[in-house]
Image 1 (cartoon, rainbow, N blue to C red):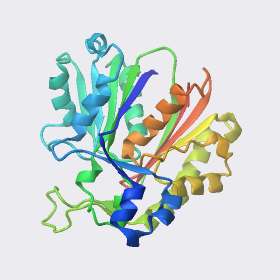
Image 2: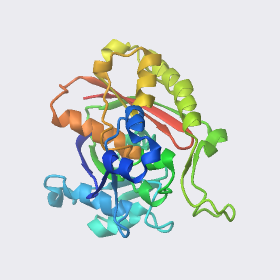
Image 3: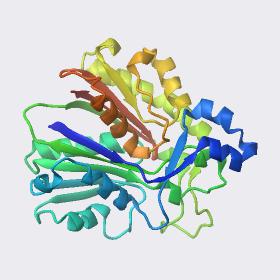
Image 4: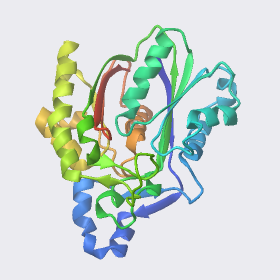
Length: 315
């Protein structure tokens, strides 16, 4: 399997930290920015959805009109779907007018969702179920955030990415690892919209300190073990691309893992884009020609679930 292309899209609406500071002077945004590394937050219009953002990203794929006849797999990773029934991937299949034999699947994963999606796609391509898959990562967290919640309002941006994955004898993704801690699901949760029980909590709830503790205690061990499994050292990795949660989260992983900061990608300017953050960062380093064939890249996502996932990729 090879990654043929990655494209991404942000909605037009932008809220700068400067404007946020004017709106909420008591929030001490200048201090917050040093912690998050974020400058801008993007959000959708009232009637715009994760599916709309995905379509915009797909339209950026060069010669997509020719490619779409070859697409036989759609994986849509989102936690803010258009509807509960049917899935976003099914609706998108109809909009794009793809072949009836196309595989479609939605996965409800947050910040670890890109690595999960890549691994699912890899298996589908390896067993000849598909030859060309679009992996979409798109969320509109602005619709589930309390606009007066200082913890979540200053972090999340709406965005979408699309990754074209193709069957090939060459192997991009050659090893991955996963972790789950369901007992800690309440560290990052949204009660609204489910059928569990009636709730007055209609917005995203995040335990920031709890999430940081989780990241520091689980993610480094998974990365170290995956490197050992593949008989690799940290110096063998060209770039480490973590989920772009916040500057403080990435700084903490750099410190614990004793990484060279030159090897770590920081792409936080436009906010935490949930499962789209890793592919957006990956697209940028490819576009800026920072990679050469054969370079090793480590991807690591962590968050909602709680879940964490790491993959090794050879460019």
